[in-house]
Image (cartoon, rainbow, N blue to C red; front, side, top):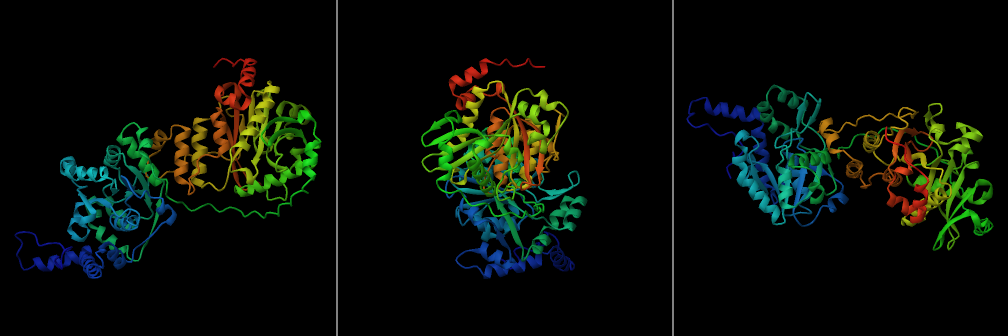
Length: 591
């Protein structure tokens, strides 16, 4: 390889006395002279054929990513790694070096100009992002080569923008230019898994301003930006794999590409808002081993709603269960704190507990409380205590007469499953079946109302997404404007995509849950209770941030059980109970 491999060559026909001095000046001004020197140093430092590692070491560039996420990268089979392109070069080398730990077969669909570095050639499939109208013809062969590589089970790193991220005046943000649908075409034709990757950062302000003058000037400055990247630590977020079936659900390659771009930019980490630390008291110690079983055994037979195996569901008032109520308050606080919530008190009990009903799950084999709900017939509480007697009215402001206009309804809340029982879905299902039994016995209550919390363990981005899009798709027409909370959802700013595109992609609850799962480090989607009530055709009335309960974001949900899926009602009420419940009610005609 020539000692001047990366320098500007002398144009054919230029032999004047000033040609060489001008070339030297041009190479220095562009940064090519310095880059060529670094290249030669990297060549000389290459051991065991690892030029990529030597080049990154010469530049002092390191890639910072979660090793657990890297370990989850599929180790075999066709894989398309799709990433944004913030710097225009160094991120490709850094990502390739990191990903090759899991996929030694990784190749890069890259700019043909990198063909001037022969040591990188075995890694590259070269395309021309500047081909313009001739792009299809010029890139036909390399794209076919890339497809064949994927069909053979290989891995391919793709920067769908083709060119570097830059400042867009309309959005006032530095993001990739529009992505080419080629990436979706490759994934679809090869049935490849897609791995979204986000690289944080951007080129200098001068680079962005130069791009506003001319895209060619921006390109000319890329070498300078590469030199500026020396001693840089690249922060990389690796997302969760996207299967071929997920992409099949989208209409065409353009929409698939937009979905992939959304998944990549959703990985961008914004600084978390500062929240007040809560000074939590120590949770009370548990009761004496025999005190609660004796209290449970003394309950009247009609307090038991149902039994299954070692479990039984009871419905009682506070006066019937002084000891169990204390344990409910203790287990509430333990389970809520474990979820990033909680009152911070030794027991999570309040004045409402004294006049609310308590529906709770008892494990007779272990002699332990396994979970609980509290509920209140809203009509009775209003008649006896007014709105102040309802917990929900302490969080949300209702227009006068709005609660009465609901008709017979139950307020549900403060639900939990004790920490030791959360590995199994059965305890929560039994609690819901207990509510179903109560409704069958009291069929006048056709509606459920209550807050469902989204914990602070969710990122601000996910909480904002859920609030905005669930308000959009699950809003209540029945109580529109009749209730207000202290939080008004705003359209979340998702970098890299316009609002209209995001709205088109997030058209239902499942899509929102999918994106939330992509954003969250632990992959969690919608909270279990929120998802449960939405499946019952729940509607969102308002939102509230509860500062006294770990800054949770509460969604106030209303469920009209007459409009719920019969299959779900059968699951919770039993087949006969669901038919009996629905036979008593006729839905009002649609307006």
